[in-house]
Amino acid sequence: MLAALLIMVAAPYPAHAQVTAAENLLDQLAGPETAPEIDIAAIRQQATERPKSKATAQPVNRPPLVPELLKLPQVTFDVLFDPDSSIIRPGSYRTLGRIADTLTDPALLPYKFLIVGHTESGGRRDHNLIVSQRRADAIRDVLVTTFKISPKRLQTLGLGEEQLRDAARPPSAANRRIQVVSFGKLPEPSETPAPPPAKKPPPAGKKPQRK
Image (cartoon, rainbow, N blue to C red; front, top):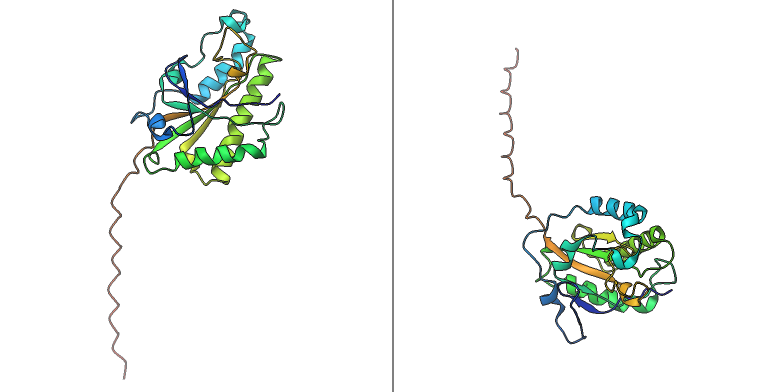
C-alpha cells in the first residue's frame, strides 16, 4: 500500500490542524531552545518489545508510546512510497525539497529535527515497525545527500503502528504518516583558545673556524 503522509500541523495531540501551501512552516517548526530528555535508542528498544505485550494486543488499547513528542512543534508532509517499501516515489521529491527549504531557512538553522515514521494497523506489527524506520531513514538520506542538510541536525525514529493518530480506526490511512519534529537547538560549538605557537629554538652559534 502507498504510504501517504498527510500534510498536517501536529498541535498537541490529537488536535491536528491542516496545513495549506500558503501557511508558514517556519513558525510551526520553531521549537524549544533545549532538547527534551528523550532517549531515541531506548524508545526503539521499547517499540521492538511492545508487540510482545498482551496488554497492547488490541490497537484501540495502545497508549502513545512517546507522549513527550506530541507536545513538540511538528509538521507532517505528504510523501508517497512504493507499496510495503522505503522507496520514495519520484513525484514526492518536490515535497522533500519544500521540507529542505524550510529546514535551511536561517531561522531554523540552529535547530535539529526528528523524523518519525508511522504506519496504520494491519499485518505484522514488528514488520510495520521495520518499514516505518526504513521510511524515516530514507527521507533523512534524501535530505542529507540530495538537499545537503547537515546529518547532525537530523535523527530518525520508526514507531510503526505503536502510536496511532486515530486509535478508533486503526486501519485508517490517517495513521500512515511521517512527522518532522523540532527537537531543540544544536549545542553551541565550544570556543577553546588555540594554544600559543611553539617558540622556535634560537639558532645555534657558529663555531670558530680552526686555523
